[in-house]
Length: 534
Image 1: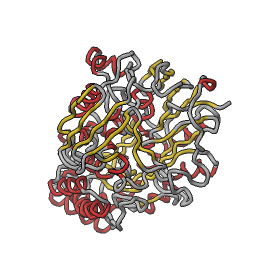
Image 2 (image 1 turned 30 degrees about the vertical axis):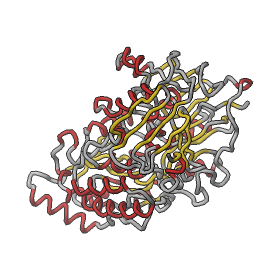
Image 3 (image 1 turned 45 degrees about the vertical axis):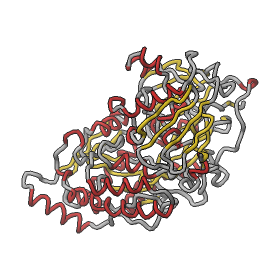
Image 4 (image 1 turned 60 degrees about the vertical axis):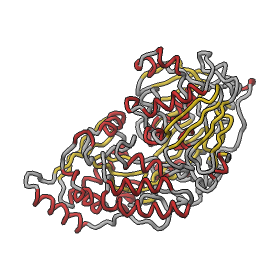
């Protein structure tokens, strides 16, 4: 068998680079440090450091503690990981996966069978032991469409999850996947205790979950506030702080609250705010995210049958967007405007090019669609969340689209509602973003652009695009992945379920008094070793 790190060495180069939502200075270029702003290694909580409170400002609160919701740091992933823990952890500095709740993870020669061993003597917070049966049960939850797990597409790649004994799980995959550890490093690695879950109700579990993590629920006010207390029986040793998560609308609000001491940790999204934080010498963890800023176009999700089901209308949107002007208006020129699916910093970048800005072609396509659909006057409804930077983005997008012959009306809503409406297809066009990790870009793109994909918010269903994405995910080495990604980009340029506007920049700012937190996939922070240094 092959060790996890060996199996992944070819596939997982540089993941969390130190620049987030749209660009930023070039001296922040690796996950291990940029301009001296990455928090220094500071060990873990010890008994003599127990106490204190760490308050984290969330960009979007975790919508629910039901399984499969905490994949992304920008969407409450730290809350979920604190309660449940994770089987594996992606170490962005070492650029490899490490066992966490697991003791080991190994693959066979062709990466179709993976064997996981659990640590011995680990219990859930209710005292029940963590078993291989619980792991297999958890995978089944993520595969069930009723769970609405954001990692359902990847979980469906597992044909069978079998508890070989109490500590061992064998995963048999539908096809070779060298990037499989990424699944267990995210929401699917948050093990759910089968007996407790089945004895509860969805409503009760969503508010009062049980996990094997370092923290337990104290209080929960949906979309406002979550307070977690240390789990006295955590397998990883003493847990120091109380954790409080609060919703702060917008990145500027997060910076303001951080400066006044209301927050000790906060999530920033957007090159302008990342640059502001770095100029203020706020330490933190930064990530460049390919396709992190996009305009989603409803291609048929939830029964939508409007003009955007016509790929010509979607291509018109793509051609109408002047990404450089977008960057100047929204990020002061500090971002990474692009129409390509992957960032130049990605290990899979191979000079891929997306649709070019072409105002004349955009107008020609709009006129062509109008001529064939006399009942359509160019109207589009643009859904925008209520953060100040998002409102500004909506104004800029409307101006560009109106210039191409569209007639855009803007609808503002709280960010939680906008997020929910994207996942239920209750929109026509909306500004959003993908959250792929360079550790395994293929799985995120497949989930976002194949039928039934957990993050296929547009409802796109194009056989040629699906085939290209399937080939990309099966590619076994970097060269073949680049070749497959070139094909994905080519087909995407025709289909355009969303228009890429920029690479995203995310920056998790951390007060100097907070020690021992570490990042994992998608800017999720892990607090099991955290402590407050007075």
